[in-house]
Length: 385
Ligand SMILES: Cc1cc2nc3c(=O)[nH]c(=O)nc-3n(C[C@H](O)[C@H](O)[C@H](O)COP(=O)(O)OP(=O)(O)OC[C@H]3O[C@@H](n4cnc5c(N)ncnc54)[C@H](O)[C@@H]3O)c2cc1C
Image (cartoon, rainbow, N blue to C red; front, side):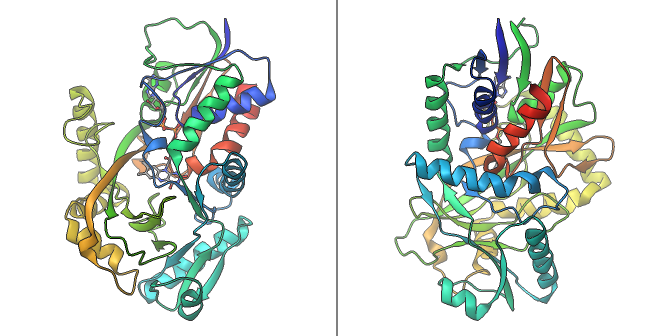
């Protein structure tokens, strides 16, 4: 009999196994993963940004773990020779109406103990090229980018060396009997479904939001840092931004377009009729109720399928760029965003539920990649051991 069975080999499942092994080196751990390797879903399809931790209100789990997670993953990359681009970040305001939110982000950052400062356009110009802001920008020196897939593979190797068993091509099925003292559900886009089969996630349901990106194909490096807009703090998305990947490719995105089934990446890939009906019904309800301004969000996001519109959003954050360089779409990702079905609101923070037999990680949305190590440690200490 195994001590722990973990469902899902995303960053959360792998980080949980790593922390469990640290806390209990003798523990027998198995991870089951429905795909043939790591990195097929969110953990391998994100922006690869190690966030600094200033977006989140101080009482949240996100605030508690992002700053520390950034530090730990940075060290992990440096110690294991994994790629990291310490290109930092600025959040820019487009007009006067956004300056107050910028200040709010600064205050949150200070409260969360994050290294952030408000700097003028002149100071921005001294640090970075081609960034445009209105009056002030928020500067984050600890934000960087990593290669998420490389990190996942490294973690997989580390866990296999430590005696953790990982079974690929092995989907969790409700009907099967599993020989483990405790089951830990880190199944990303399917975490709510699995949780429900254990009697959890009663108030929640995952709504998938698709993030698409455009990649710059020309060779001029017209920016040298990550550039983000001021987000709408009422929803959990950060807005279309520029990121610079570890190999110095410039990307814009991701969007937050409501998807129609959970793994609705491209075309009819992974289409499931019952999921489609279920999700479209929920989204139609949210659209008519206009809960959390879902209608406005959906209509705004859909516009971003139009390349020109999408590019123009990013263009306003730089002094100049050659928009013709943004021709190719790059790999999309889908957020496993939790909806509270009682209040019809999107859940902002990570959610964990469980009892003696099972633990369920719900709403491991951004920045859960950044936060994964300390978040997993906290889950192990508080819900698993
Ligand atoms: C577009 C986008 C951009 C993002 N950008 C960032 C960023 O820059 N920085 C950051 O920190 N975070 C970012 N995130 C968030 C981050 O990617 C996620 O929070 C994180 O990857 C969640 O990890 P996970 O392990 O919970 O999920 P996943 O990576 O989805 O892993 C879950 C795993 O469970 C498996 N699984 C599902 N069902 C079953 C089953 N029945 N049986 C067995 N296995 C199953 C899946 O195949 C999958 O491998 C972004 C997310 C998206 C979508």
